[in-house]
Length: 413
Image (cartoon, rainbow, N blue to C red; front, top):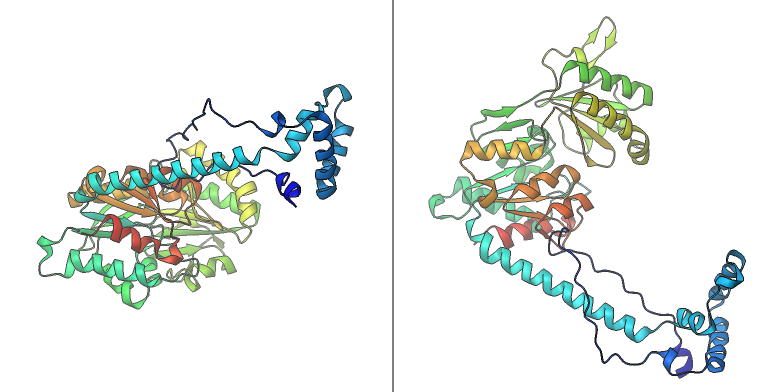
């Protein structure tokens, strides 16, 4: 009936997601009008409103339960009058719908304006592309979407294969990943993987950076003391640990989650570290390790139990905790991150990251890289930290070709 439609539950006015501009930008204030139309409270008497309330509660039994609970919890003197109760129950749907529509329109306009600014002012200067691998190029199933595959092949061709390279806009393309070099090559498949041998790269969260010829331009390793204390933490928590030494990965126990690094994520086979006096200790590995993975299949336990302990260890030694995947925490040397590695490689290649670089990512460990680049783009599945650091957030996720579409939109002519 018309009356039932009139008192339908009110619409809600949730703030639209800030997908087109930095989170730092404030939400727009909605304009008000002196000519606002009268609400329902101005049109009905107390008796009429009481009748409306009874009908509303009959149609909405859950509301009646809430009212009973309210009466039990609140002092009678605090219960609002009949006007306030009815207006709260039935809402002013017209005002809510109008506010939602206006706010959505404002957000879409800001997204469009932001995109136009990037395309007009920043895109013409882009000559280099740095991209994360897991969660950005690759889907959760470790697959490359055809749009992303084609864009990566196009970028590498323009940079390193084309006879007319000097005429192409994009001069440099490189992965910026937590994986080892061999892990990145192995995970990107037969079409793309081998092409990375032609590219410079930022590997192991920026701790192992190489130029096109494979020369190391920057690397840094953890101290044995930090590794030893991390190993003790892992032992106390009953979880797994892996140390990265370039393309060689070592562990103290071959658990299922450790084996998944090679079986699912394409990393080289993880080796058992050599024993010292009958004990398997990463801290005694002769060459040292660039980073540690602290791993367990229980992602919630890693977040709520292990990470706080690892953060205390990190604070004690000035080292860094970061995360790329829910089942893995990472421990890095002091002052290091993926962004630092990207900056070091950019300097070696003559790239000004603040004006020349397009960076793509999805995770916490990508945030600083996205923030430092001229254009930082988060794919649609990105975590809140990465989204906050980016200049633009793609609607499309990694498994919808979001990274490839970003390269086409913000990188290529």
